[in-house]
Length: 461
Image 1 (tube, helix red, strand yellow):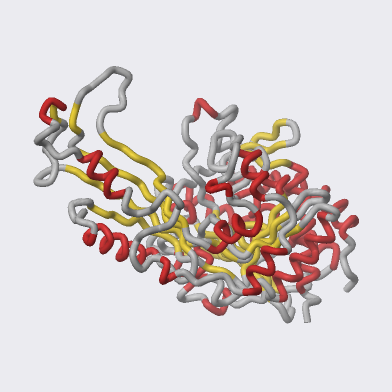
Image 2 (cartoon, rainbow, N blue to C red; image 1 turned 90 degrees about the vertical axis):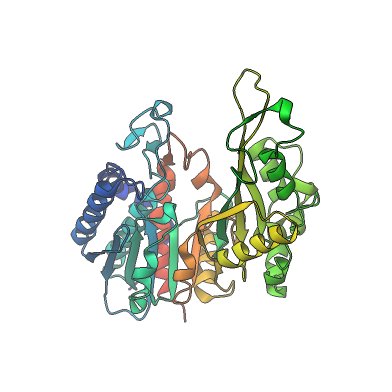
């Protein structure tokens, strides 16, 4: 079985564009917002099984108390197993008038393909499958056993996925796990990611009797009626100081500090992340003027506590002089080891009680645990070396843990996870927004990179 040569793989991959788009069109057509679109989610899962079976996989549906999990496997008797994690559920479409074409019908315009899920995460499913098919074609036989786990609740917290992972541990055992897609493109800076932060989401609420009025009140009585908005603001103000220090007692005690190996990886980081952020968002400065290793350390290893939304009182165009009877805030906490959603919930409630804000209700939504794999795992190192070859002379950086979240903690006990992308993959794609799209050259390079990963993985000692 000969080694794959990248230039030849890319040439062959271009012939898979039509197949990739045909596959993608079949699954974009199903509205799959979890848990809203029960019929669409089931139909999409059944279509995925059909498509994987057509490609020579053994595929099936694992029913959970939530939405179905699709599994597919091609066992060729190889020594190593390559596992893929994807999700077929998508974000809500949002205002239809902001779409230039239907979110539920794939449309190619110019060099981009449009539709909800084109980039997150239906497009990557197509690329992963076609990459494996390409490797099989060029090598005549797959060099690794391949397994797919494709869930239908990622955008809704993966609430039921544990029902599958807890009962299918042998299926999850692998020498490498591709997480939601893996790619690198020539001359485009790349990131090799081996961990995700966790996420805990809370609603703080000050509302109603006996602590606040049953209805909004004329502000002429503000001197004797408790104001829910001020009460909430004062409570929120106890959580952080102006230097971004989280003041919740016991919070920092749970945080595992980066190792010498982690800091060494940050020292090797090529590129100016601060400039990239300022350019992307038209900022004159980063938060606290962070830059260099100091910025990367906070970005990849430190937790965050963010006010994501504030609601209270009257927001209309006219003047309305009231004392608000209720106020609420949405808070997002990005977690690092060893913080958990439950621990943060406990600490926040204890903090508010100690500060005298027992009247503030704290509600937690389903969240994700943090998870990461070893930077020096052979699979991750192999992907990094391959990426460096592909993108040169552009840089390819290893990122220990990104700010986004997902159910990786259910998988990493059994396989080292790796996600990879080039900046060209994610530019102008409108992920989670109207007119979501994928760049067609990116799709082809993704197919080629996956084929190369399968080949190189088989040669890891």
